[in-house]
Image 1 (cartoon, rainbow, N blue to C red):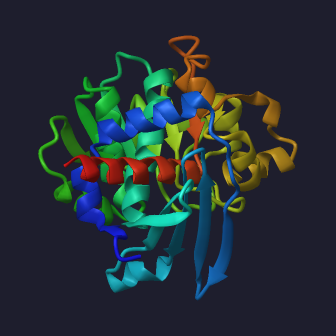
Image 2: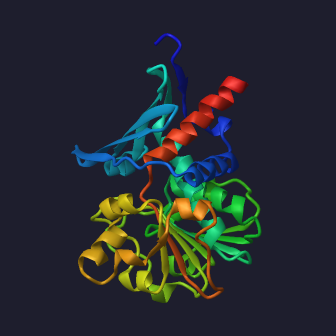
Length: 309
């Protein structure tokens, strides 16, 4: 254990760019990783998540606490650590900041879906939610759609949206605080909230828009209305994970108002080019709950980058 490497959030941000994360995940999904279900446990009003992943060379597990009460304490709501193992030698290689991996891999997955599904003439991006994923998704989407000219950030608490915008450096497009309706009317919409009731409906979005829904990661949470799903082509990060955890889809499917056979693809079919937008007017939805293999890929990239340095 003496040679165990430790990487904090700053190390991770310095070691792996968003573009490198997108490329790494795209190559991973094109090869077809195996999904391993995560476990979630209630803990002191929050949740404790255990997310293991294994491939031919490595194994790893993310241990994460999600504590909503930290919003009132001015502390991060998501905190955790990642342990990366060399599978062949059976020894731990590194400890990494778990929340920093999440901030990188979640928007990178959204960017892969956006690159395949969003129109190439998009000029506006709407962000609904004001947490760490807001800024991260702006960075990720700009990697695949650099022609975006305007970004609208919206939150149920306007002050939070204003703080999120103020914290962003000059990224190129015009940044604005807007209403949820204004964000929803953009060409690309990223929803990253802890909502349990839909915040986005069919009437709020334009024909031809693309939506990334990443905030509702439990079967009792949802950000998207049933009528929006029925008006859209729906893709997921991984079908079994979505069937276990994606409340946006689980709830209407259980009610008989939407069917799983309408899922048009996943990150594998997207990454190999088998799932694409079919028309200019088509509304596309990418529903993500987050996969442990994504953390494994980014953790390996961090370690590799530092070993080369």
